[in-house]
Amino acid sequence: MEVAPPKWRGLLSGILQSGYTMGFLLAAVAARLVLPTLGWRWMFWLGALPALLALYIRSKVPESLAWEQHRAANTGEVLRAVGKHWKRFAYLIVLMTFMMFLSHGTMDLYPDFLQEVHHASAAARADIVIVAQIAAIFGAILFGHFSQKIGRRFSMMCSLGVCLAIIPLWAFGGTLTKTTLGAIILAIGVQGTWGVIPVHLNELAADAARGLMPGLTYQLGILCAAPTNSIQYKLRELFGYQWALAGFEVVTVLGLLLLLWRGAEDHGKSFVKETGELSEVNSGLEK
Image (tube, rainbow, N blue to C red; front, side, top):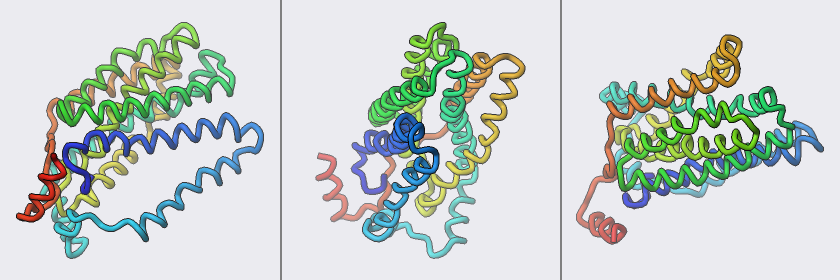
């Protein structure tokens, strides 16, 4: 995000977020093709291979100009920068917690839901996840691009509207075909919302803590949302699988809409300190 021209941030944010979805898609493909024949150990080692890219990134990709300009002298300085923006930091933790409720609440138990409610085979479940993740990539890029034109929060709220509208079909579709259609459209809405997150977090982060705030709020959101599956299972025991998933996600979407409506946005924020020479370069990139 720090090296991207501002006018491309939204689109690139969606593409960046699609890396997560692409990983989920490849895992579904592996579950469809590798797991039945070679077993889970091959799944594990194949999944570990992409992590080797971190070695290349660490050794070959240079630091951004924005990082060089705002680089903190030590960890204490970074933490003080976060402390000065503690309200925004807390807001982002809550936002990311609900975002985790949205994504993991719609994905983690859904194959089990398809098996229990619709008696779908392992192959059918994998096929549905594969198709839904392809749609999710489209949603992330589409709404990430829209966020550049209509604003980060409003783009996310529009994609959440898609989620809210399709939840009844996703959870209560009478046939596997209808349920699959609901899963595809919901994936577009869920990852459409997520497609804005990379740029939104970076724009809201303090300059001196941009390496810390997005990643830490993301991880703390995961921590806070860790009981998602346990909550849904408990709700399933009380209300049934369909109402458990649907009710949980309706509350999640409404909570996110409220957070975004009342929340902050720093659309188009400059990440670098402008100098005369740098301004000319940026003007050229904008053109």
